[in-house]
Amino acid sequence: MHKKYLLDPNSIFIKINHAIANSVYIFDVDDSVLVWLSDRGQELIGLTLKDIQALGPAYVEKIMHPDDLPKLIATIRNIGSIQDDKPILLEYRLRHPNGSFNWVHDRITVFSRKENGEVESVLGVVTLVNSLKRREQEQLKIIEKLNLSLSAAKMGTWEWDLEKNVLHWDDRMYDIHDVDPATAKPPVEEVWARADRSDMEQVNIKVQEAAEKRQDFYVTYRTKYRNDEIHHIRVYGRFISSLNINRMYGVAWDSTEEIKTEQEAAEAKARLISSTKMAALGEMSGGIAHEINNPLTVIQARAFQLNQMVEQNKLDPAKVKQAAESISRTADKIAKIIKSLRSFAREGTYDPFEVVAVNRLIEETLEFCRTRFYNHGVEIEVGPIDPDLEIECRVIQIEQVLLNLLNNSFDAIQNLEDRWIRINVKDMDEEGIEIIVTDSGAGIAPDLQDQIMMPFFTTKEVGKGTGLGLSISSGIIRSHKGSLRLDPVSENTTFVVQLPKFQENLDH
Image (cartoon, rainbow, N blue to C red; front, side, top):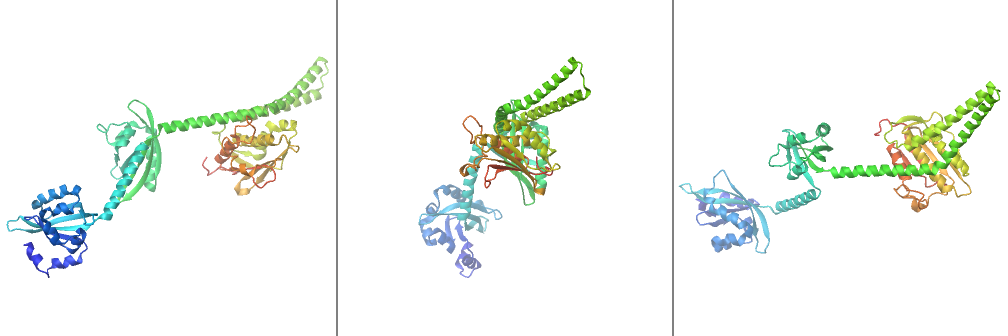
């Protein structure tokens, strides 16, 4: 039956051959030979139909890649059972006489049947798919590298169908959650059964928000292993919508060691901050002792005066009142110094923000160092400050920053002939305020200006500085949404603290 189509040069079949870009062939089932091959097919194989027919049934071995032969031979053996409505789909490589191979997709259908219904011949439509196979191979390499990276990072992957509420895990996800895949419940149930309930409530809120806003999310929750150990699982997820299906996919990993490291780093930082402040207290101890010793001398003198009046029975009400008021004022001054000392010794990170007058911040800070500076011939000058100028801050932390700047200035200029420190405040209106600390030093060398805010960098002599003061101070000011910077154009050493007036609508 198929022969009449091949013998008629005007048949629609022959005309289609010249029009389509695919390679087309007709295979005779009984003789196991190609009886017709389109022009495109002959170009693809690099042989004419006569060349192929001359090879006989062995032509398959000549034009096929060795690795693809078994599946093609198996198909040829069973081709007689092909059904009209169920084409055979194959992918294989064809050898060209120049030695190259081309990947093709072959769609095989029944072309003709005998009178008894047996398949007489089949029609194959071959499409060149080199570019498609290259992309597939590139994707496989990418997936292989991704899997290698995920394996090295000990990460698992997951996918969540939001419509059906079905969560799929890869094998690594089961390892991360210490779950045996052979006996595991569905992943959603496993998470809820093992994870901390309060954590999962927060996870649900973030996931729902991400789904509603179609955005990425990042969460952490605690889960219990079979040995009762608590592990921290961190998850990154991304929302995707395609073909009207909403789903999320992402990665997860066991971050228990990571969190322990973070906690240890935070504790180490706290210890460093504490040691830095203790060193500062040591430097100020002489001045603090003098600040307290002078008022105590006044109290002792007034107490002696009162005692003398009692012993001599010469109580003068006016003098008694004067002595009592002097003792009270002096005691208030000591109390203020002690209060400032206690505040400085505290860390203050978790103190609430409060509105405070700027002149109060500066005066309380100067309580620590005014006498010490005076005894060393360092003049302190404070410019005019509007008494109504206020900022919202953690008072203790800002006073610590100012004291650190003052101590740095003191250390830098104590050997100079001209020793002075000036504090000025600028009201920047909506931009906040600037507290400017300037000393008589000649500034910071240009090659050191970019390093002074780095942790452990110091310009002080060995044993006289930890190099943490400016780094910590800069961090404190950043936590207030402000900045601490060196003024590089000032003739003298000048540091500028810029702070917003209010912390509302800012993330503390």
